[in-house]
Length: 373
Ligand code: F6P
Image (cartoon, rainbow, N blue to C red; front, side):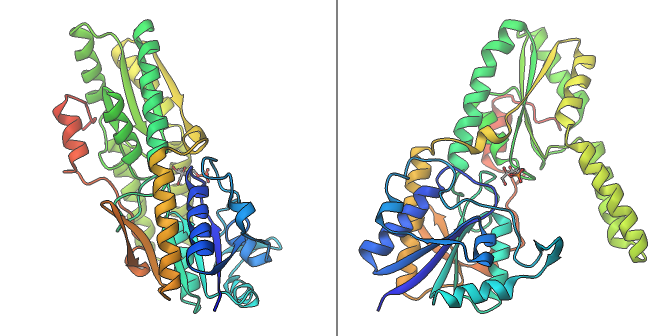
């Protein structure tokens, strides 16, 4: 009997998503006799029943294309903006699922999507998720789809900034994405030979960074590349953040909680230009000219790397196999050279950050890179 399967891509896009859709869709069609329905724009398409039957023609020619042919959004099923109000729309999504007589729904996304998909699983749907984010911060998988491409782009940027920093005898700070995890900045910093790498997991002291840069100058190297994770923070700011988080938690009533929440929001908003402020501070402390490059969405765009195409094809195909076996409630994780289903509840509400004793951290220190601590 033919099984009907739905699929959606949610959260920030990454290169490799189309490879995963193709891997899932082609395996579903050719190998397992499954019919695939793709919902547009993440959970929003599931709510509004905007979809397409994913047949051979829609799955052809997409392997090397970045982004997602289904579109994506950051909509949360339990907190959806509908009619100007934030509403729990999970029941309406359950209706769409049954309207299409789906046997399973595949949700491809990052940490938020894992949680949102779990919320639909709690409503009785057969859910399978795939781990996708350039941040590489999902637990219980060795790697996430899109990380390799983003790492390549960020490393290329670090490489290219070397020659211009060298020519002008400048400090160049390059801000790299990754949300609250330092995998991308650390990976690109080590691969590209950045002189300083700042990640959220290791709060920094600006004076230590300035001293490392001056030490390079004294040894005849009059330029420095600083790879800064977008979530990196000084020790002082990290302390202040923690104080506010504690205050919010200990607030005695709703009014006080709202007040602290506002201060915390202002704190994060001020943090958003921390790389620019750090650049100014370093210029002052070292007397060297300093410039900033914010890589931003370039890291999420364009052609997926060979590794992400391979990974997407692999986890997509494995997902079709699991659905054919009647398995659900799992995330298809990557373990070594193979894929493995892991229970979805072991993944949700967790974040994989860089451990202080990780080999990438040790490697950076061993080659003399300053980590700002
Ligand atoms: O999660 C991927 C990511 O690119 C993060 O690195 C970044 O913090 C965030 O998404 C940006 O989100 P948005 O696409 O909503 O601006």
